[in-house]
Length: 259
Image (cartoon, rainbow, N blue to C red; front, top):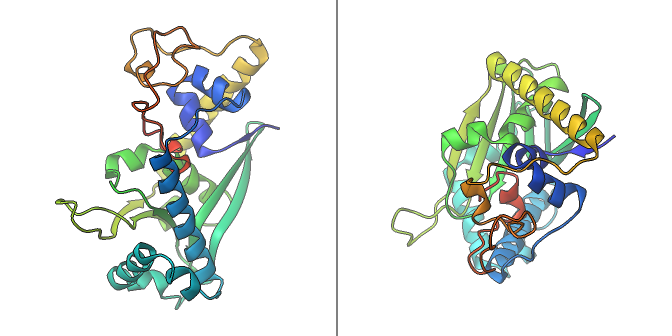
């Protein structure tokens, strides 16, 4: 049974041929040093929040990273409710859930899952500088799959669950300081049903493509999606841009297909 994530759903919908290269053929392109540095900082922040939730000492970590310390202090000051556990029936960092659908295995990992008797909230930490808009996040497969799996694997109805993105390093308009910003996304039965239909469509498409034993289809020849794609030459879509100009997202952002 093939395992799928939100990032793979995004790639499949964005460009089936890129899905083939990236997921099935395990091809990749080296990330830029700046991109790798951003990934490392994001990993440190996620680890910090996980250690904090587990009750482990975090002062040794903070003492070696002033920006990390500042971001956490600002987050606690701006959203103290995030750290208020009163009334919660369940709370866990890096909480993993799985779901089988149409002969595929879906796995999600919540940065923080908070549950009460009558509602639940998924918290996701984002560490890049420019927050995504509400419309973008509502359509993003991370949001859709995370909420869908939570409803399908619990007794909550869609209206009882929500997802909140916290952009912990968000730059202020003048880019002089950083201030945490959040995007709150409620859920509904109509959205849940639409997500189910879309997962059904994509998994059915993937099954047909796998059974055909043929190269996966490409996007139209004049699609702007090919302009900055690292597989442009491989797909015979003209010359790929230099490595300096290829806008490759971090692993975190690949799940949002920021191309």
